[in-house]
Image (cartoon, rainbow, N blue to C red; front, side, top):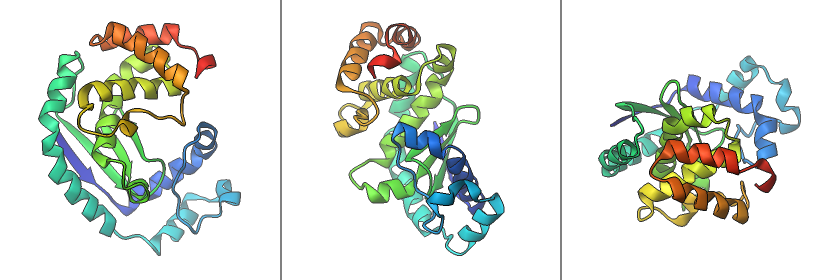
Length: 222
């Protein structure tokens, strides 16, 4: 399983535009987003794509991207083969290649399941050096692999994240800190514990586990 790494001015520009479009949703869900310091948050919806492009031109460079690319290329081979085997073992179908887009903007990580792409916000990891960029890469690839089941069962956002956290813990419990498997700010302890009981009852049948979780878990107890 290969991982292609890319970064560009154009990708950063689009990431900023997309982040502004979803800014209210991110705020509602408690996500911290990174945007260029020259953007006035109070007037965030007033910026055109051309305005943002002009702001970005004065500061864009690829220095941090090159450093992060080297780190990822060094670490990816340590996990890729085992990760692929683990995905196949639970009857998921990993792609031969994924693309990781590096940026300095938006949330920590996100994914596009149709194009097998993930987006990684390097600023997030500079701000939180205790977090593992490799864990987030693996997390986002798990998202891509279960996205079909998530959509079929109309799984709400918080439960979707908990499902991926539980799969990650099954695969990598001994590789990363527990912080990588528990998003405390997104869902409650009681919600987390109930989800884990249901998940464990059906694991390694991921499809069935997601079906049962979508039936038994409600947004009321997040």
